[in-house]
Length: 227
Image (tube, rainbow, N blue to C red):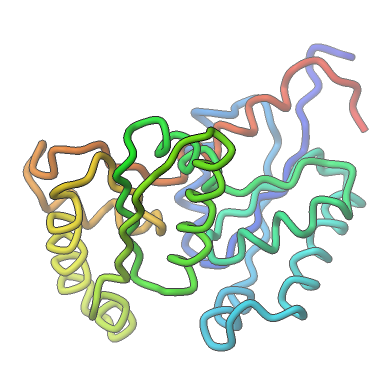
C-alpha cells in the first residue's frame, strides 16, 4: 500500500451544525483520513417525534451502503439517538460502521460503578444508557445507572433560549454528579453548558462523545490496501 493512502470516511450527522464541530477534531485526531459529511436532520426529527421507526433504520442503512459504494472505508454516525440503527446496519456493509458514543461508554464503566447519564432528549437518553449497560456487561462489571433528561432544557433550546438551556443543564449536572463516580453526557452539545461551572465544581470525570468517537477513525490509517 502506498504510504500516501488516505482512507475516505463518511461522517453522518443529524444536526446541521455538527460538521463544523467535527472538522477540527478530524484534523487533530484522525489527520490521515479524508472525511466527507452527510447531514440528514430528518433522521433525528423522526426519531424524536415517533421513536425508533423501522423506516428510519432502513434509511440510515441506505446511507451506509451508499457510502461503501462511494469508496468510504468507514462510516462514523455522530448522533446517539440513532446509534442503535448504526449497529443494525453493520451486517449490511463490509466496512466499519462506528457509533460516536461507544468509546465514551467503554470508558465510563472503567471509571466507577456509579454512573450518571444526562441528556435533554429521551430519544438520546435511552440508547446511551442501554449502551453503557451493555458495555458494563461485556466488561463483567455491575453498575448503578442514574439517568435524567434535564427537565425544561430541550424546550428552552427549541424556543431559542440558549442561556436558560445552559443554566438548566449545568444545574442538573451538578445535582447528578453528587454521589456518582462519572457523569456521561449523552449529547455532545451539553459540554458547552458545563463551561459555566468553575473548574472542579462537579468533582467527577465528565465524558462526552466527539473526541473519542472521532479518534476511532485513526485506526483506519494502519496499513491496509485501498478499496
